[in-house]
Length: 396
Ligand SMILES: Cc1cc2nc3c(=O)[nH]c(=O)nc-3n(C[C@H](O)[C@H](O)[C@H](O)COP(=O)(O)OP(=O)(O)OC[C@H]3O[C@@H](n4cnc5c(N)ncnc54)[C@H](O)[C@@H]3O)c2cc1C
Image 1 (cartoon, protein in one colour):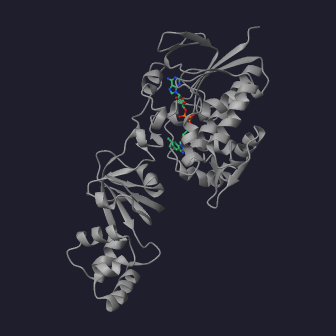
Image 2 (tube, protein in one colour):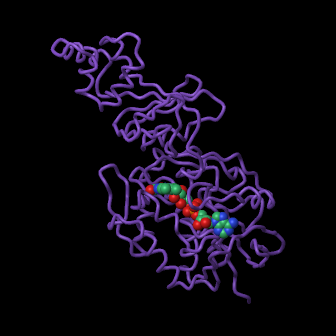
Protein backbone atom coordinates (compact mmCIF):
# COMPACT_ATOMS: atom_id res chain seq x y z
CA UNK A 1 0.00 0.00 0.00
CA UNK A 2 1.22 3.52 -0.83
CA UNK A 3 2.29 5.84 1.96
CA UNK A 4 -0.36 8.42 2.90
CA UNK A 5 0.65 11.91 1.84
CA UNK A 6 -0.38 14.84 4.01
CA UNK A 7 0.13 18.37 2.73
CA UNK A 8 -0.01 21.34 5.07
CA UNK A 9 -0.23 24.81 3.55
CA UNK A 10 1.16 27.35 6.00
CA UNK A 11 4.03 26.85 8.42
CA UNK A 12 2.63 29.02 11.20
CA UNK A 13 1.45 28.10 14.68
CA UNK A 14 -1.35 25.72 13.68
CA UNK A 15 0.37 24.24 10.61
CA UNK A 16 3.55 23.36 12.50
CA UNK A 17 1.77 21.83 15.50
CA UNK A 18 -0.58 19.82 13.28
CA UNK A 19 2.36 18.37 11.32
CA UNK A 20 4.14 17.40 14.54
CA UNK A 21 1.11 15.76 16.16
CA UNK A 22 0.33 13.69 13.06
CA UNK A 23 3.93 12.52 12.70
CA UNK A 24 4.23 11.73 16.41
CA UNK A 25 1.54 9.07 15.94
CA UNK A 26 4.09 6.92 14.08
CA UNK A 27 1.91 6.19 11.09
CA UNK A 28 3.15 5.25 7.66
CA UNK A 29 2.78 8.73 6.22
CA UNK A 30 4.71 11.65 4.79
CA UNK A 31 3.94 15.15 6.01
CA UNK A 32 5.04 18.21 4.02
CA UNK A 33 4.67 21.83 5.09
CA UNK A 34 4.45 24.37 2.25
CA UNK A 35 5.40 27.85 3.47
CA UNK A 36 5.50 30.95 1.32
CA UNK A 37 8.08 32.75 3.47
CA UNK A 38 11.79 31.87 3.66
CA UNK A 39 11.34 30.27 7.11
CA UNK A 40 8.52 28.61 8.99
CA UNK A 41 7.19 30.07 12.25
CA UNK A 42 8.44 33.62 11.61
CA UNK A 43 5.30 35.26 13.00
CA UNK A 44 5.57 33.37 16.28
CA UNK A 45 8.70 35.38 17.05
CA UNK A 46 6.67 38.61 17.04
CA UNK A 47 4.00 37.36 19.42
CA UNK A 48 3.52 38.57 22.97
CA UNK A 49 6.09 41.34 22.48
CA UNK A 50 8.68 38.70 21.59
CA UNK A 51 7.69 36.51 24.57
CA UNK A 52 4.90 34.44 22.91
CA UNK A 53 1.83 34.28 25.10
CA UNK A 54 0.84 30.71 24.23
CA UNK A 55 -2.32 30.28 26.32
CA UNK A 56 -4.29 31.57 29.31
CA UNK A 57 -5.42 30.24 32.70
CA UNK A 58 -9.03 31.11 31.75
CA UNK A 59 -8.94 28.18 29.30
CA UNK A 60 -9.15 25.83 32.27
CA UNK A 61 -12.90 26.34 32.06
CA UNK A 62 -14.23 26.41 28.52
CA UNK A 63 -17.58 27.89 29.57
CA UNK A 64 -16.05 31.15 30.85
CA UNK A 65 -13.37 31.13 28.15
CA UNK A 66 -16.11 31.15 25.46
CA UNK A 67 -16.72 34.82 26.32
CA UNK A 68 -13.24 35.61 25.07
CA UNK A 69 -14.15 34.65 21.49
CA UNK A 70 -16.56 36.06 18.93
CA UNK A 71 -17.93 32.70 17.92
CA UNK A 72 -19.30 29.68 19.83
CA UNK A 73 -17.82 27.51 17.09
CA UNK A 74 -14.71 27.34 19.31
CA UNK A 75 -16.59 25.48 22.06
CA UNK A 76 -15.59 21.91 21.12
CA UNK A 77 -12.04 22.92 20.38
CA UNK A 78 -11.40 24.65 23.71
CA UNK A 79 -13.35 21.98 25.60
CA UNK A 80 -11.22 19.15 24.21
CA UNK A 81 -7.98 21.10 24.01
CA UNK A 82 -8.21 22.89 27.35
CA UNK A 83 -5.41 24.55 29.30
CA UNK A 84 -4.05 21.27 30.71
CA UNK A 85 -4.03 19.55 27.30
CA UNK A 86 -2.27 22.56 25.85
CA UNK A 87 0.41 22.58 28.55
CA UNK A 88 0.87 18.79 28.34
CA UNK A 89 1.18 18.96 24.55
CA UNK A 90 3.96 21.51 24.82
CA UNK A 91 5.56 19.70 27.75
CA UNK A 92 5.75 16.57 25.59
CA UNK A 93 7.77 18.62 23.12
CA UNK A 94 10.06 19.79 25.92
CA UNK A 95 8.68 23.29 26.53
CA UNK A 96 8.59 24.59 30.10
CA UNK A 97 6.07 27.38 30.69
CA UNK A 98 5.73 30.28 33.11
CA UNK A 99 2.46 31.91 34.20
CA UNK A 100 2.27 35.63 34.96
CA UNK A 101 0.06 37.20 37.62
CA UNK A 102 -2.79 37.63 35.12
CA UNK A 103 -2.89 34.00 34.03
CA UNK A 104 -0.99 34.44 30.78
CA UNK A 105 1.37 31.57 29.91
CA UNK A 106 4.75 32.19 28.28
CA UNK A 107 7.79 30.00 27.75
CA UNK A 108 9.90 29.93 30.92
CA UNK A 109 12.64 31.79 29.04
CA UNK A 110 10.09 34.59 28.25
CA UNK A 111 11.40 34.29 24.72
CA UNK A 112 9.30 33.35 21.69
CA UNK A 113 12.41 31.79 20.15
CA UNK A 114 12.20 29.00 22.74
CA UNK A 115 8.71 28.03 21.53
CA UNK A 116 9.86 28.12 17.92
CA UNK A 117 13.05 26.15 18.68
CA UNK A 118 11.04 23.40 20.36
CA UNK A 119 8.68 23.18 17.37
CA UNK A 120 11.55 23.26 14.85
CA UNK A 121 13.41 20.50 16.69
CA UNK A 122 10.33 18.27 16.62
CA UNK A 123 9.82 18.99 12.92
CA UNK A 124 13.43 18.01 12.25
CA UNK A 125 13.42 14.90 14.48
CA UNK A 126 10.13 13.64 13.06
CA UNK A 127 11.35 14.01 9.49
CA UNK A 128 8.65 16.44 8.44
CA UNK A 129 9.43 17.88 5.02
CA UNK A 130 9.48 21.67 4.88
CA UNK A 131 9.28 23.56 1.61
CA UNK A 132 9.90 27.26 2.19
CA UNK A 133 9.56 30.05 -0.42
CA UNK A 134 6.66 27.99 -1.71
CA UNK A 135 3.49 30.00 -2.11
CA UNK A 136 0.44 27.89 -2.89
CA UNK A 137 -1.81 29.74 -5.30
CA UNK A 138 -4.37 27.15 -6.43
CA UNK A 139 -5.99 23.98 -5.13
CA UNK A 140 -7.84 21.37 -7.14
CA UNK A 141 -10.00 18.74 -5.52
CA UNK A 142 -10.30 15.38 -7.38
CA UNK A 143 -9.64 11.90 -5.94
CA UNK A 144 -6.77 13.52 -4.11
CA UNK A 145 -5.70 17.16 -3.77
CA UNK A 146 -3.55 18.89 -6.38
CA UNK A 147 -1.85 22.01 -5.12
CA UNK A 148 -0.09 24.50 -7.36
CA UNK A 149 2.53 27.05 -6.43
CA UNK A 150 2.71 30.53 -7.95
CA UNK A 151 5.56 29.28 -10.16
CA UNK A 152 3.41 26.40 -11.44
CA UNK A 153 4.94 23.55 -9.45
CA UNK A 154 2.39 20.82 -8.75
CA UNK A 155 2.13 18.61 -5.64
CA UNK A 156 -0.36 15.94 -4.66
CA UNK A 157 -1.64 14.85 -1.29
CA UNK A 158 -4.31 12.57 0.18
CA UNK A 159 -5.12 14.87 3.09
CA UNK A 160 -4.84 18.63 2.84
CA UNK A 161 -4.50 20.90 5.86
CA UNK A 162 -4.89 24.61 5.13
CA UNK A 163 -3.52 26.99 7.78
CA UNK A 164 -2.91 30.32 6.07
CA UNK A 165 -3.36 32.61 9.08
CA UNK A 166 -4.83 36.07 8.75
CA UNK A 167 -4.00 39.18 6.80
CA UNK A 168 -2.06 40.86 9.60
CA UNK A 169 1.57 41.69 10.08
CA UNK A 170 4.47 39.96 8.28
CA UNK A 171 2.34 37.01 7.32
CA UNK A 172 0.29 39.47 5.23
CA UNK A 173 -1.52 37.42 2.70
CA UNK A 174 -4.01 38.39 0.10
CA UNK A 175 -4.88 35.07 -1.47
CA UNK A 176 -6.93 33.47 1.31
CA UNK A 177 -10.20 34.37 -0.36
CA UNK A 178 -9.20 33.19 -3.84
CA UNK A 179 -7.75 29.92 -2.58
CA UNK A 180 -10.72 29.05 -0.42
CA UNK A 181 -13.61 30.19 -2.59
CA UNK A 182 -12.34 28.12 -5.53
CA UNK A 183 -12.71 25.00 -3.37
CA UNK A 184 -16.28 25.87 -2.40
CA UNK A 185 -15.87 27.80 0.84
CA UNK A 186 -17.44 31.10 1.78
CA UNK A 187 -15.09 33.75 3.11
CA UNK A 188 -16.67 36.66 4.98
CA UNK A 189 -15.21 40.15 4.75
CA UNK A 190 -12.02 40.49 6.77
CA UNK A 191 -11.08 43.39 9.03
CA UNK A 192 -8.03 44.16 11.13
CA UNK A 193 -8.54 43.53 14.87
CA UNK A 194 -6.36 43.86 17.98
CA UNK A 195 -5.11 47.02 16.38
CA UNK A 196 -4.61 50.69 17.31
CA UNK A 197 -7.46 53.06 16.44
CA UNK A 198 -7.34 56.42 14.66
CA UNK A 199 -9.21 59.33 16.20
CA UNK A 200 -10.98 62.27 14.59
CA UNK A 201 -9.60 64.58 17.29
CA UNK A 202 -6.13 65.92 16.65
CA UNK A 203 -4.10 64.38 19.46
CA UNK A 204 -0.59 64.83 18.10
CA UNK A 205 0.38 66.72 21.26
CA UNK A 206 -0.44 63.64 23.36
CA UNK A 207 1.88 61.33 21.39
CA UNK A 208 4.00 59.15 23.67
CA UNK A 209 1.80 59.46 26.77
CA UNK A 210 0.93 56.18 28.50
CA UNK A 211 -1.77 56.01 31.15
CA UNK A 212 -3.96 53.42 32.85
CA UNK A 213 -7.67 53.92 32.30
CA UNK A 214 -11.02 52.23 31.86
CA UNK A 215 -12.07 52.17 28.20
CA UNK A 216 -15.64 51.88 26.94
CA UNK A 217 -16.31 51.20 23.27
CA UNK A 218 -19.56 52.62 21.90
CA UNK A 219 -21.03 51.89 18.50
CA UNK A 220 -23.99 54.07 17.50
CA UNK A 221 -24.26 55.15 21.16
CA UNK A 222 -24.56 51.57 22.40
CA UNK A 223 -21.92 50.24 24.80
CA UNK A 224 -20.39 47.19 23.10
CA UNK A 225 -17.33 46.55 25.26
CA UNK A 226 -15.70 47.72 28.48
CA UNK A 227 -12.19 47.03 29.66
CA UNK A 228 -9.39 48.45 31.76
CA UNK A 229 -5.67 48.69 31.12
CA UNK A 230 -2.92 50.60 29.43
CA UNK A 231 -3.67 53.35 26.91
CA UNK A 232 -0.93 54.73 24.68
CA UNK A 233 -1.38 57.91 22.68
CA UNK A 234 0.01 57.90 19.14
CA UNK A 235 0.40 60.55 16.44
CA UNK A 236 -3.04 59.92 14.93
CA UNK A 237 -4.79 57.72 17.45
CA UNK A 238 -4.78 55.52 20.52
CA UNK A 239 -3.28 52.14 21.29
CA UNK A 240 -2.39 49.89 24.25
CA UNK A 241 -3.93 46.56 25.27
CA UNK A 242 -7.25 48.11 26.37
CA UNK A 243 -7.69 49.85 23.00
CA UNK A 244 -6.58 46.78 21.03
CA UNK A 245 -9.30 44.80 22.80
CA UNK A 246 -11.89 47.49 21.98
CA UNK A 247 -10.82 47.35 18.33
CA UNK A 248 -12.42 43.91 17.95
CA UNK A 249 -15.76 45.71 18.19
CA UNK A 250 -15.05 48.55 15.75
CA UNK A 251 -17.65 48.58 12.96
CA UNK A 252 -16.84 50.28 9.66
CA UNK A 253 -19.48 52.84 8.55
CA UNK A 254 -20.98 53.22 12.03
CA UNK A 255 -20.42 55.87 14.70
CA UNK A 256 -17.61 54.47 16.83
CA UNK A 257 -16.42 56.14 20.04
CA UNK A 258 -14.05 55.29 22.85
CA UNK A 259 -14.66 56.86 26.19
CA UNK A 260 -11.81 56.83 28.72
CA UNK A 261 -12.35 56.97 32.44
CA UNK A 262 -9.12 58.51 33.71
CA UNK A 263 -9.89 57.89 37.41
CA UNK A 264 -11.68 54.57 37.28
CA UNK A 265 -11.39 53.78 40.99
CA UNK A 266 -13.39 56.92 41.92
CA UNK A 267 -17.02 57.89 41.34
CA UNK A 268 -17.62 61.15 39.48
CA UNK A 269 -18.80 62.85 42.70
CA UNK A 270 -15.56 61.78 44.44
CA UNK A 271 -13.47 63.23 41.62
CA UNK A 272 -15.44 66.47 41.88
CA UNK A 273 -14.89 66.57 45.63
CA UNK A 274 -11.15 65.91 45.22
CA UNK A 275 -10.84 68.69 42.64
CA UNK A 276 -12.76 71.11 44.85
CA UNK A 277 -10.51 70.35 47.84
CA UNK A 278 -7.33 70.76 45.78
CA UNK A 279 -8.66 73.96 44.21
CA UNK A 280 -9.27 75.49 47.65
CA UNK A 281 -5.48 75.39 48.18
CA UNK A 282 -4.16 75.92 44.67
CA UNK A 283 -6.73 78.33 43.15
CA UNK A 284 -6.07 77.28 39.57
CA UNK A 285 -7.67 74.27 37.87
CA UNK A 286 -4.83 73.70 35.38
CA UNK A 287 -2.37 73.53 38.26
CA UNK A 288 -4.69 71.17 40.13
CA UNK A 289 -4.75 68.84 37.11
CA UNK A 290 -0.96 69.02 36.72
CA UNK A 291 -0.69 67.25 40.05
CA UNK A 292 -2.77 64.36 38.71
CA UNK A 293 -2.14 63.86 34.96
CA UNK A 294 0.75 64.29 32.45
CA UNK A 295 1.17 67.91 31.32
CA UNK A 296 0.06 67.54 27.69
CA UNK A 297 -3.00 65.60 28.78
CA UNK A 298 -3.92 68.45 31.12
CA UNK A 299 -3.68 70.92 28.22
CA UNK A 300 -6.01 68.73 26.14
CA UNK A 301 -8.53 68.38 28.98
CA UNK A 302 -8.57 72.13 29.60
CA UNK A 303 -8.85 72.84 25.85
CA UNK A 304 -12.00 70.73 25.64
CA UNK A 305 -13.89 72.60 28.37
CA UNK A 306 -15.96 75.75 28.02
CA UNK A 307 -16.55 76.01 31.76
CA UNK A 308 -13.59 75.26 34.01
CA UNK A 309 -14.96 74.10 37.36
CA UNK A 310 -14.79 70.94 39.47
CA UNK A 311 -18.12 69.63 38.17
CA UNK A 312 -17.26 69.92 34.45
CA UNK A 313 -13.68 68.72 34.87
CA UNK A 314 -14.83 65.69 36.91
CA UNK A 315 -17.32 64.80 34.18
CA UNK A 316 -14.62 65.03 31.48
CA UNK A 317 -12.15 62.99 33.54
CA UNK A 318 -14.76 60.21 33.72
CA UNK A 319 -15.90 60.60 30.08
CA UNK A 320 -12.85 61.57 28.01
CA UNK A 321 -14.33 60.74 24.62
CA UNK A 322 -12.71 60.10 21.22
CA UNK A 323 -14.39 59.62 17.87
CA UNK A 324 -12.87 56.62 16.13
CA UNK A 325 -12.58 57.02 12.37
CA UNK A 326 -10.40 54.09 11.32
CA UNK A 327 -7.98 51.39 12.45
CA UNK A 328 -4.23 51.37 11.83
CA UNK A 329 -4.83 48.63 9.21
CA UNK A 330 -3.92 44.99 8.69
CA UNK A 331 -0.17 45.53 8.67
CA UNK A 332 -0.30 46.87 12.22
CA UNK A 333 -2.88 44.42 13.52
CA UNK A 334 -2.37 41.30 15.60
CA UNK A 335 -5.43 39.58 14.26
CA UNK A 336 -7.90 39.27 11.40
CA UNK A 337 -11.63 39.45 12.12
CA UNK A 338 -13.86 37.55 9.67
CA UNK A 339 -12.67 34.77 7.35
CA UNK A 340 -13.91 31.31 6.43
CA UNK A 341 -17.50 30.90 7.52
CA UNK A 342 -17.45 28.36 10.35
CA UNK A 343 -20.78 26.69 9.51
CA UNK A 344 -18.85 25.03 6.67
CA UNK A 345 -16.38 23.40 9.08
CA UNK A 346 -16.84 20.48 11.49
CA UNK A 347 -16.20 21.93 14.99
CA UNK A 348 -15.11 18.51 16.33
CA UNK A 349 -12.42 17.86 13.72
CA UNK A 350 -11.92 21.05 11.69
CA UNK A 351 -12.62 19.00 8.58
CA UNK A 352 -14.24 20.93 5.77
CA UNK A 353 -17.92 20.09 5.37
CA UNK A 354 -17.52 20.88 1.66
CA UNK A 355 -14.45 18.75 0.88
CA UNK A 356 -13.76 15.60 2.93
CA UNK A 357 -10.10 15.12 3.97
CA UNK A 358 -9.53 18.87 3.78
CA UNK A 359 -8.91 20.62 7.11
CA UNK A 360 -9.13 24.35 7.83
CA UNK A 361 -7.22 25.69 10.81
CA UNK A 362 -6.50 28.75 12.90
CA UNK A 363 -6.87 32.42 12.25
CA UNK A 364 -8.17 32.17 8.68
CA UNK A 365 -11.48 30.93 10.16
CA UNK A 366 -14.04 33.50 11.31
CA UNK A 367 -12.82 33.24 14.90
CA UNK A 368 -11.23 36.04 16.85
CA UNK A 369 -10.28 36.17 20.48
CA UNK A 370 -9.11 38.66 23.07
CA UNK A 371 -5.50 39.53 23.85
CA UNK A 372 -3.98 37.16 26.40
CA UNK A 373 -3.09 33.94 24.55
CA UNK A 374 -6.58 33.11 23.26
CA UNK A 375 -5.71 33.32 19.57
CA UNK A 376 -2.65 31.12 19.73
CA UNK A 377 -4.62 28.72 21.93
CA UNK A 378 -7.29 28.48 19.26
CA UNK A 379 -4.62 27.89 16.58
CA UNK A 380 -3.07 25.05 18.67
CA UNK A 381 -6.53 23.63 19.47
CA UNK A 382 -7.59 23.49 15.82
CA UNK A 383 -4.29 21.77 14.97
CA UNK A 384 -4.79 19.22 17.75
CA UNK A 385 -8.35 18.28 16.75
CA UNK A 386 -7.48 18.04 13.06
CA UNK A 387 -4.40 15.90 13.78
CA UNK A 388 -6.48 13.52 15.93
CA UNK A 389 -9.06 13.17 13.16
CA UNK A 390 -6.48 12.55 10.45
CA UNK A 391 -4.68 9.96 12.61
CA UNK A 392 -7.97 8.18 13.30
CA UNK A 393 -8.88 8.11 9.59
CA UNK A 394 -5.47 6.77 8.54
CA UNK A 395 -5.58 4.09 11.23
CA UNK A 396 -9.06 2.86 10.18
C1 LIG B 1 2.52 41.17 16.54
C2 LIG B 1 1.61 40.02 16.92
C3 LIG B 1 1.59 39.58 18.23
C4 LIG B 1 0.74 38.55 18.61
N1 LIG B 1 0.80 38.08 19.90
C5 LIG B 1 0.02 37.06 20.26
C6 LIG B 1 0.13 36.47 21.56
O1 LIG B 1 1.03 36.81 22.34
N2 LIG B 1 -0.76 35.50 21.90
C7 LIG B 1 -1.73 35.04 21.04
O2 LIG B 1 -2.52 34.19 21.42
N3 LIG B 1 -1.80 35.51 19.78
C8 LIG B 1 -0.96 36.48 19.37
N4 LIG B 1 -1.01 36.94 18.08
C9 LIG B 1 -1.95 36.26 17.13
C10 LIG B 1 -1.34 34.91 16.68
O3 LIG B 1 -0.02 35.10 16.25
C11 LIG B 1 -2.17 34.27 15.57
O4 LIG B 1 -3.51 34.20 15.97
C12 LIG B 1 -1.64 32.87 15.24
O5 LIG B 1 -0.31 32.94 14.80
C13 LIG B 1 -2.49 32.24 14.16
O6 LIG B 1 -1.91 31.02 13.80
P1 LIG B 1 -2.19 30.39 12.36
O7 LIG B 1 -1.46 29.10 12.29
O8 LIG B 1 -3.61 30.39 12.06
O9 LIG B 1 -1.53 31.43 11.34
P2 LIG B 1 -0.06 32.01 11.23
O10 LIG B 1 0.70 31.74 12.46
O11 LIG B 1 -0.22 33.40 10.76
O12 LIG B 1 0.60 31.15 10.07
C14 LIG B 1 0.16 31.17 8.73
C15 LIG B 1 1.32 30.79 7.86
O13 LIG B 1 0.84 30.52 6.54
C16 LIG B 1 1.76 31.07 5.60
N5 LIG B 1 1.03 31.24 4.34
C17 LIG B 1 0.03 32.11 4.10
N6 LIG B 1 -0.42 31.97 2.83
C18 LIG B 1 0.31 30.99 2.26
C19 LIG B 1 0.33 30.39 0.97
N7 LIG B 1 -0.54 30.76 0.01
N8 LIG B 1 1.22 29.39 0.71
C20 LIG B 1 2.09 28.99 1.68
N9 LIG B 1 2.14 29.53 2.93
C21 LIG B 1 1.25 30.50 3.21
C22 LIG B 1 2.20 32.37 6.26
O14 LIG B 1 3.39 32.86 5.72
C23 LIG B 1 2.35 31.92 7.72
O15 LIG B 1 3.63 31.43 8.01
C24 LIG B 1 -0.14 37.94 17.67
C25 LIG B 1 -0.10 38.38 16.33
C26 LIG B 1 0.78 39.38 15.95
C27 LIG B 1 0.82 39.82 14.52
